[in-house]
Length: 111
Image (cartoon, rainbow, N blue to C red; front, top):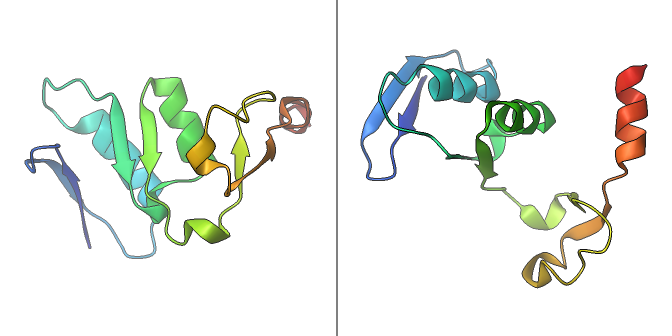
């Protein structure tokens, strides 16, 4: 399988051969870091298989915005970034659940 990295004007900037069972997140990260162009990448759009909690974390640490296109978004569990933002995302209200509990995330990372 070939994983393509395509610039917004449909120009392939990086491609790589990967096995069908390997992680698309790893392939996505490799393309972001090794595209060998002078282009400044700010956002990276991926399909459902190119996103995970790990992908969001690494993209954030590296200064990229991960922009996934969710398959079957109606069955996804999405969380608000913090409390008090209910009116900020009115179009996403049907799919957003509770705010992220950052205390639980921090405590689970310590263990």
